[in-house]
Image 1 (spheres, rainbow, N blue to C red):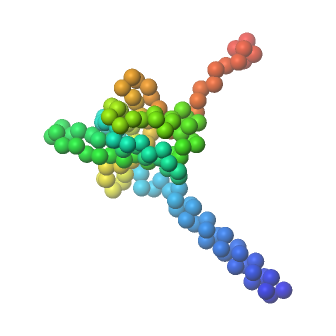
Image 2 (image 1 turned 30 degrees about the vertical axis):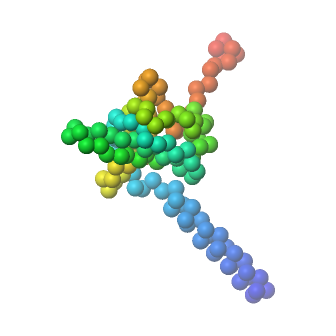
Image 3 (image 1 turned 90 degrees about the vertical axis):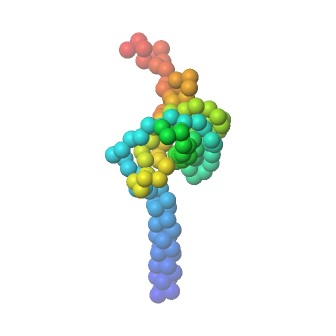
Length: 139
């Protein structure tokens, strides 16, 4: 009986120990949700990867110096549901990015929206709009 209790306790503690890194991984505490930054730049790279995708852009400062910014976003499955594909952001493309910046001041943030040169606005958390059905339109 004691061996069974010990085995169950060890298993429970092992499972609980594995949950902590998963919770820490999904923390957004490094971003400042109270601040929003808007940046215009040129796409350097779009990493459409799990568990998080990254958009990297080059921003030209008023002094003529460039700064690379990185924006963390959701993984491909969530982005695809929002209409964002692997080729949505191509190197050299001009974009305007809105993000929640890093609290520590580094040139990075949590991606909120990207506006492309043609005016298309993409948001990683957007849900596709569903057209009303004929039945719904009739009221």
